Image (tube, rainbow, N blue to C red; front, side):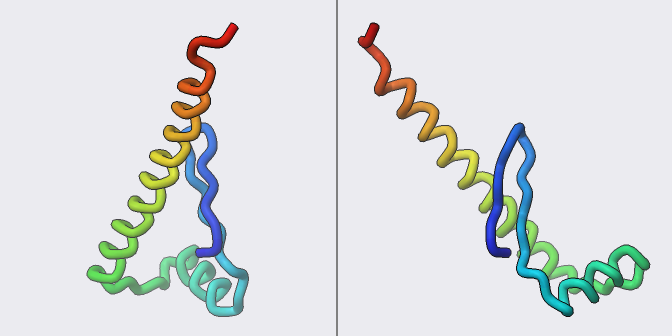
Length: 73
């Protein structure tokens, strides 16, 4: 994963394009992908952590913007 963008309640993950990625995506769509359950579970937890840290960071920016405007006209 090279990037993640959160917008309108959705998170989009970006990955480096490579022959291996293309192979894995093709296997997925052909229902030929094999997944190690332990690795899958760990990866989901990591991605959820990324998503939650993005939300937390965005909330801090919004809250700081609101807090910085208090008392101004």
